[in-house]
Image 1 (cartoon, rainbow, N blue to C red):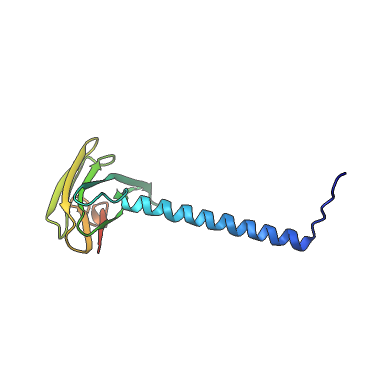
Image 2: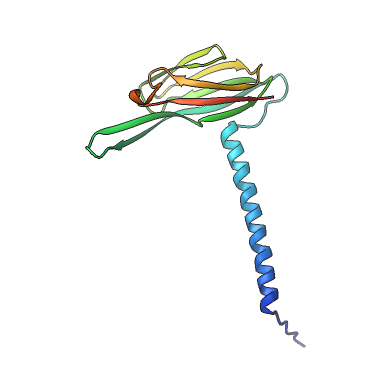
Length: 155
């Protein structure tokens, strides 16, 4: 014998709303997890070990209304979060631009990234704060910048 199930419009709307809320919650959880992984550059290293965070140099290029080529360079990702006390290696690969000499304000770190090459610099995140990684070739808009990234040391 077959059973027939009758579902009212009210029940159908109720279950559809629950389904949409569940999908929205899962989508938000995925997005926040993805964003966190993208900005931090990886998982936290165990105590005393060194964590490597990978960056690349990037370029935006366009043409203005007069037909002039305009470009801007950037670090990608542009913001990195680390924890106070971590030992960090920044592994930076040059994708765009011939050379990017840089400094990290407040961390006594400097280096140069060249196209097609990897540059690794290290630091110990001993003080909380926000530190700028600044390309000395592109420090402002007049020099195809500002090519500035941020390292945030969280307590």
